[in-house]
Structure formats: structure tokens, C-alpha cells
Image (cartoon, rainbow, N blue to C red; front, top):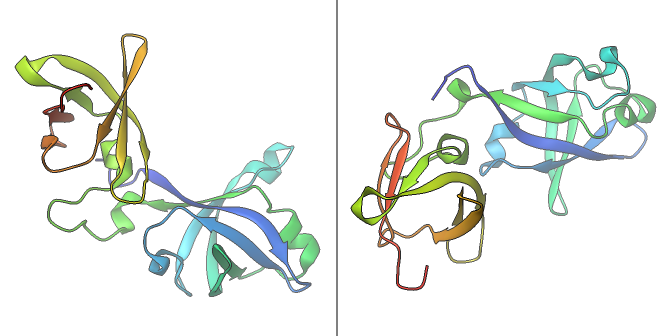
Length: 174
């Protein structure tokens, strides 16, 4: 876990109104990640180097909107300025996130772990996490195939972030 590693926490998916409000699809579990006064990193989507550069931005205000958020940023006044940010990604430094609760992990810390099964057989690397209604599902890729592993205490035996491994006991049929 690199503390200065940047984690994507949301994307500008549109604009709202004439005053420069951004529609944001949040990847963050907690809406507090986008609290007013917080400074985040924004990487633009633009067609040239200047538009794509990374820059700090401070949130002036935030409010829930449909399945996302409406956000006002300092220095973004007007629809034209907001439209230039559509497609941009919000990032936060890993070190700025609160520590996860006991037994919980940030997805970014799990992606890339080596997954091993019974008899220390290497199953592959955790490549993605799929949220479902009841529990997450880990996508493990290796040897040209994918294995879907339910994120259940009965299946995931141990996670060692230092060794970058996840030990699993797969149910019959997986």
C-alpha cells in the first residue's frame, strides 16, 4: 500500500444548470469523500496536453442528485467551464482515506493480489471486484481463464496485504 498512490473516486459525467455545477458519478463508498472544503486531484479528459494535466481542486459545495452528486468547484463558474471538465476523473491520495474497519479492505488494496487455493495452488491474480446485492465477487484471472470467487468469510480464508496474497477455500464446482 503506497500512501501517496492516487485512487480514482469519481468521474464528471455531465453538467447541471448554468452556474457550473458538475454531475459526478462517485466510486467512493462514503459521500464524505466529496465533502465541501476537501481538496482533490482532477485529471482532465481534454484533447490536448494542457486540458489533460493534473490539478488540485477544492470542493465548494456538494449535494446528492439522482444516483450521483452535484458538485461545485472553486474557480469553475459557468456552464462552459464546467463542460470542459466532462470526462475528467477525481482522485484522492490513499493516505487521505480513513483506515478501513477491522476485516475490511479498500478495493484498490486488493486488486493485484495473488490468489492461492488448496495446497498453495496459485489460481491467478485478483483483477476486478464486482459488487452484487448480497456480497462482492472477486474476479481472479490466470492461465487464460477467469474464476469468480464470492467474497465470503467461509471462502476467503486470509488476506495478507504485506505479502500481497489472498488464500481461498473454493466451494465445490468453482
